Image (cartoon, rainbow, N blue to C red; front, side, top):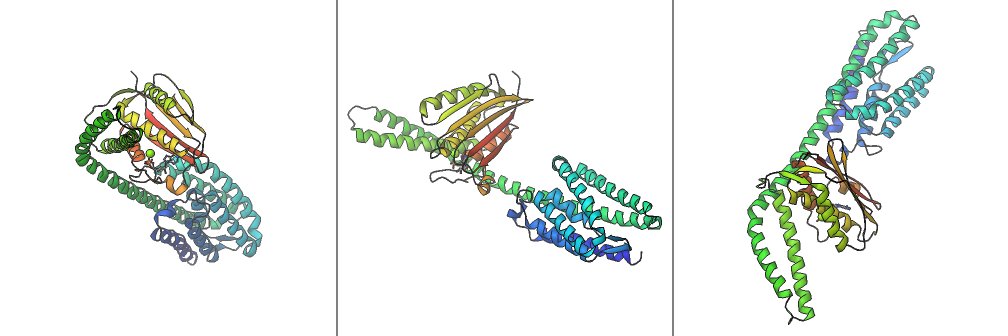
Length: 415
Ligand code: ADP
Ligand code: MG
């Protein structure tokens, strides 16, 4: 026992250090642990796994004790499926080479554990911190009890007290690593949110100070150009120049409108907005204006939310316009659906356009992020902001080459 304990404490370090190193050398892009098939995270866990297996703490001839369960558990719960599976395979391969007699026991145990963890994982991801802690504890408790029963069956009762201590240490290690990962994840999340908010704040300050001043002269100029455009004595060429000027002014206006919606202090009070009729009107307008895109619509009547009508219009228009722009070289259908789901209004806008690359997907909603030559990169960040203020959320799913789905969820209000 005196010999086993220091060994085991070394093992704890073998596990904790690689995880710590991972977070020390972590850069922003590596946070995609769940989606990347084999991430850096898995490599660091693999190192931990090898260390703990090469330098185990033995406590009985028939039983070698190490902390291999910890990296494997973490790889499955916090990494991708493949990284969990790879770690198990490496572990089994090692067992086959160096602990031949144990191989089938490990094969059986870890197959069961892997299947069980895959079943647990979706629930684990949704759970809050405390529940995660309980889930992991229960899972490990099941393992420890199985070990105890095995010892009793094989007549090694005298080993039980040691098993209890070892299991406690393992349990603490699991919790320590779990806490470490959770805390680090939280920090990265907060940092990202902060950066995003800073950008939005900068934009809205600019908006508040400049846009009002610019908006009025623009409207005046546009008005006079429109009057000129109607004059008979102008040649067609001159008229086309004027048309171009008016179009460009309209573009400038829409940019300013976007800036204005970003600026925080809202003068207009929230009222009740009938999303169904806003959408119907937009669709009518688009149908006359856009001929080469096929609109497929399904809008339930009387969907009402709390908000400001022109802001809601703006959100919908921004998203629909992006969908249409994405289909410029990919002709197809644009679906616009709105329906009631529980206490929410769910609006889905689906295009069959060029789709969004994975790396760009993360940046949608960031002020000034655009992939278009004449883009402003304001439409999405304004829309995200408005929907957030209304207590709703926007989610984006996209596949490069196939299209994009925007889902807007807003809390329903009753008239
Ligand atoms: P802008 O349209 O001026 O570029 P947005 O904020 O509206 O700015 O959109 C930001 C970026 O998001 C676009 O440049 C485009 O790359 C991407 N995007 C948004 N919606 C879609 C879509 N439906 N399909 C493909 N890409 C999209
Ligand atoms: Mg846009």
